[in-house]
Length: 443
Image (cartoon, rainbow, N blue to C red; front, top):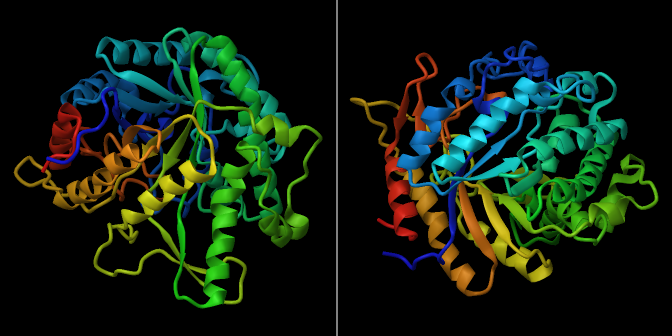
């Protein structure tokens, strides 16, 4: 048996509202940008929408019971903004608040600590129609939604995340166009990124005011970059990737401002900044959530940031083609601990997708077990070395709607039959339950 984790270590799994809930037209929920995006032909690989997804809106008692079987003591999930404020900044929908009331109460009754993400990408479409995250009015709408939600749940929920993956909210969605709203405009993307980080800074004191004793953080997807060769050009490409993908988001919330080399490279596309913005987004937080899956290998092809190679080993890959490289997680957490002063770190997402099949009522996903095990084995040594890591949330609790990939990509510890909504705990889920109960990596 590997070294045990510290007493009180959090063992959880993570989900997001649009990916699991379904019920997109029930109980007063408004349209989100993902409803509109998924309904647009060609945007989702499988042609599916977010309804029914994993139907957790109706099946959450079953899902919480399964969390108990897995031995989880924490669960990370997100609130659907369009359920709470269907038009983004208009009337509040009581049925939406009632739903999350029930979810939180059921989690607490099962002795599972709720970790709530306030924004995991499902912006009300009405706000997008007025400019979305590229406009500062959306910041005000977000703050109103946050206040309403935290006032209702903050007496019981004490762990809050303002945003999930600002890089995806902005760059992937507004420059690359792979996610909703599907734009391809660098200037708009960078302004959206700035406004999201600013809204984070403004939301933190609102959360603290309405949830006394709360722990508040933000979740960043961080990808360590490595040069493809020792050539100076490749080292420069890896540095620029790091600056634009990682530093652009972690530095401002830490009071370091935007990385100047990336700022200069963006030129006229750099965001407009109002006086006080940078100080506001650097508000102290209680923890940083880190989402990690794989690394980036950078090769210069005469473009800033170079060409990104997501794997070097053509064998050691998950189904999406991402390389399995646990050392990058060690490098990542070591770097954050060395260069920043976050009081605590959480691994808020880590997991792997494979082409799971049901065989005689079971799912034998040994490759997923191996992926998670390799990453977990690296953590006790980091904690012993002083990295303030307090928890690990596997992505994902159950197979769900994986954004632009639809239901093709399965990350779950629990298999979802999307035709019948039957849940089957995979071998990885059974193994993970042994880890959670032992508070140690087991074979």
